[in-house]
Image (cartoon, rainbow, N blue to C red; front, side, top):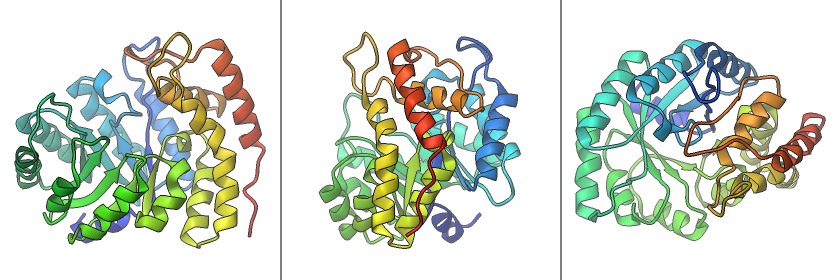
Length: 310
């Protein structure tokens, strides 16, 4: 898929998918994963992000990451676009990129830098080496201050960069970055439905979703409302989804670290929706009983809720 078509393919809802395991975090259950993917594809999903944070990237081996990506390609239709996450040193990322390309992926999402010490010029060289070393489209993933505006603006001028996933809840910084960048990239709101409306006003033409794994019709209705500038309808849908996002933000029972519930909520939602979620792998834990009860209440409300027309 050429760069122009890939940029266009990211102008939608990017479904960041969860990975079901066979039992208690053991081997990846590829049959269950394929079933989940087919279900959300049938609901209208066309852009899939495999091996992201929702997909427990750091709990997977490289072999598992490649196999998970291959399942995404095989289980979704010809209209689907598949991006896959990668992290590490330049050669590690490029090795994964080669394997992803062989598996049929369309794009490479470079995870947010996790090195303790970084330099802006070094970051530019790091990303440019990756862009120069792969034929896949490249998605830049910003999830914190390390990846500065100057670095992102510079990278948008590289032909390989097709999208920027901006996952920081700073609309002012996002809008200024979009304004400063001259490269032709698609801007993606990387923090899901809660910020979909303000980020759309600031220049995002797509957003990522985790809850879309189990309520795809609702998040696709939100995207449609935003795309048509039906703001009242968009706000109603957004508020209906907000309790799920609030629960994902919480640390989880027995923890003080924010967002510990993020992936467990998605996996619980998959189970409730008749898909396959199952358990998470360490360093995550499954939802506690109280949070699961709340999750069931939120899901029952959404499962019977119809996004109103304008």
